[in-house]
Image 1 (tube, rainbow, N blue to C red):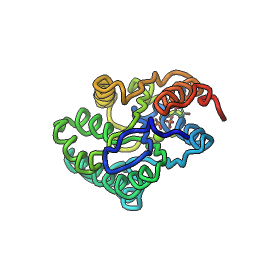
Image 2: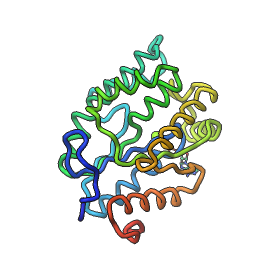
Image 3: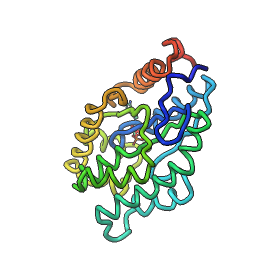
Length: 229
Ligand SMILES: Nc1ncnc2c1ncn2[C@@H]1O[C@H](COP(=O)(O)OP(=O)(O)O)[C@@H](O)[C@H]1O
Ligand SMILES: [Mg+2]
């Protein structure tokens, strides 16, 4: 397969493709990722699907410190640094090695979630959150970020219907969740070539089709490749 359209080297990596899903809780990220990964595999790509916070042993150990109730006070700086620490391990141990071998990485959340939740949500300065994350990621930027845009109300309705319980971040108010939504949209608007914004209330197959269409165009694949599988 021709990978010449894959991104330029940004953090010492070669011809991999780094795709991130972002969007509010309940937007449908976890619903889309397995099918997209299977499609990349059918196209002959070596795919790593992973999530944040997590993806490494230390990251999965940090995850409950951030998400579970009952950790005592988790002030905004501590929260931001825990996310960044998990991300540093994830980038160094999993994401960069996979990209360096030419693989595709599909990741559920990345730096934008920290900008959206720890900066816009918790009201830390965006500058601080970005600088901590630049250190954590070694400057790695996704080739494509799929933003599934959902209202706080719809997101909450979906997750209470499907899971019945909410983690520490999810259980914040709708007013809290409105701020990350605005922040995600602003990030996408600032760099449209690196984002695909999709209305998360579209049907699952339609969302999958739109993502594949964009990936085909970025990787120089014929549009018919999008319907394979
Ligand atoms: N396009 C969609 N339309 C309607 N419901 C959806 C759609 N995508 C996902 N869902 C449902 O919404 C809920 C949350 O989806 P999920 O993929 O877990 O979201 P996320 O990973 O973004 O939090 C699940 O019950 C899922 O079945
Ligand atoms: Mg999910």
